[in-house]
Image 1 (cartoon, rainbow, N blue to C red):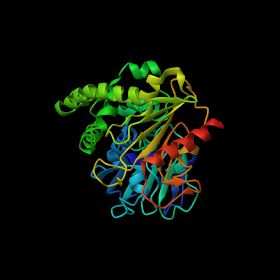
Image 2 (image 1 turned 135 degrees about the vertical axis):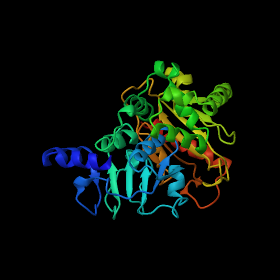
Image 3 (image 1 turned 90 degrees about the vertical axis):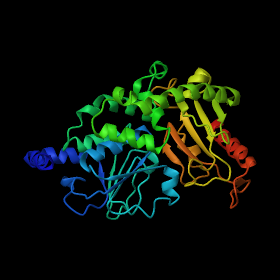
Length: 358
């Protein structure tokens, strides 16, 4: 397969190859001719986000590097150094912040846009609705990825916040796939391998283990809806939901679907006080920000990364979907101590003040 693909690539004219490279926004210092792309790299490990975009991106890379180990991670874990011991020049980082020791980085987050200093890493960054779309554009030159095309339409919508209210309520199979992936790394890996092998989404959902998880998720949906309903506060068209300490997580879609046209954006507080990354399912108390994409179809009225990076230098994401850790603060700014319950209230108050000046 690789030989045939290489021949097809060599047969392209220089103009065609140069056009492909320009469209893919290759960045950084490359050890060989840039026209060769990432295909010469000996990737043995893929560190990717554990959401749907990260899983699909990992599955695409595994079509090329079929035996690469896959490790799922969170942006905060990577920035906290949790994976420092396993990331090297044989590692690809997908849908996560670039790591200086990696061999390849594929990402689309606004806050992770490269600004030079890539060293020997190959960085493929592009303004794109998803990292999976970037991977597809790159690797479809060498391997058949046609079975990903319909799935990618949904990945793009979900990751960029362009799904409609009607589509969200229609409960597409891909929506359930994204919820199943959230059940744990073992399930995420199973889904990734199914996608790598070309198994259609509907067949993945019919797998006995995954179908049982769907039943559990449907039962948990009532608990989630009740938790959002009981804790939601709307202040100046910002919906605030406190889920910290409950073990419950929610994305912005469920919150804004329930808030309706009463909010322009939402803020979800989750995680555990005193927790650190790398403690199993526990993680530090954090905030996620989302534009109400059901109301603002082409982008929100405020760049939410301003909130995510106000106190946490490692915060970020997209203008319409981003997150950060809650930081200990006082009147002078961020201070060096453990985060307290009062800090959560102080962070929220500061963010609401910034929001009020939009």
